[in-house]
Length: 378
Image (cartoon, rainbow, N blue to C red; front, side):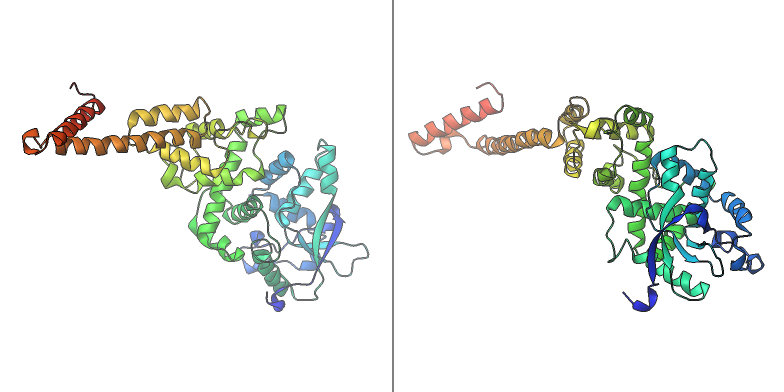
């Protein structure tokens, strides 16, 4: 990694009230005249908080933190405000998250455990003495490679969540999540990722969030914490979410919202047991089972296709077991077809054409056998 693009960082723990939002956050600047003197961040704090809360989907982020707790998917980057006797820090990256934290802490009814986790958080202090534009350039580069490149390897779910948070920050849609290739390209460039990777990660993350929010799953999770959507279930969801051409008719996904329809959502829960503790006895226990189910769904025999699909959906048989039986039947059917072809050839041959009595006897017996195999009367 080029040394010149890495800021000098120090991880520190700070109280949230030591953090001050950047009045020059790109979301707040539409004209050059809107820019403020960075040294006024402290006096402008109430105004900047109000501006950040207005139209930047902060309420959604606050709701997510309330429901899921404070999960530091990515660091908040800060630098110390010069000339202050007390330690105070300007937020260089993570203003939206800090806005949500500050807003939640104003709620007197906030859960005490959540309050404790928000009052003091870990941040990355940039200790370089550089102009503001240079610091932001370095941080932008670092965020693009930190968890998608060689520094730290996040889990697929953590990467997807990071991409999602960045995407919705840029999107700023009033109607919720929608796929916009221009926004996706912007995020892909910022994270040094192919656009297709960004889209695929978003498809899985949105699908996981949709399933997690289904009443059947949320009610089960309220009864038993071992139920519900977990980060480790990423692969079993991604097999469907990222293969719409393969599973589209059976589990359709909207190409713009990345959401399953209602029937498909319920099928996902039914097959994967997201409402059962640790997905016990789920017919779809791993991505390979999806692929076996696909073979069942594309069986040329309509009746076999119907019956075997019900075995998976209703009887909760694993697709791999169901397809193993069907594959055995198909191998047997291939022998039947071969024998039928032999039968067709032999029927064009008369016994008078054969020279020996032994050959006639063998041919007669073979003909009788073929008649029985084809369920014809001798």
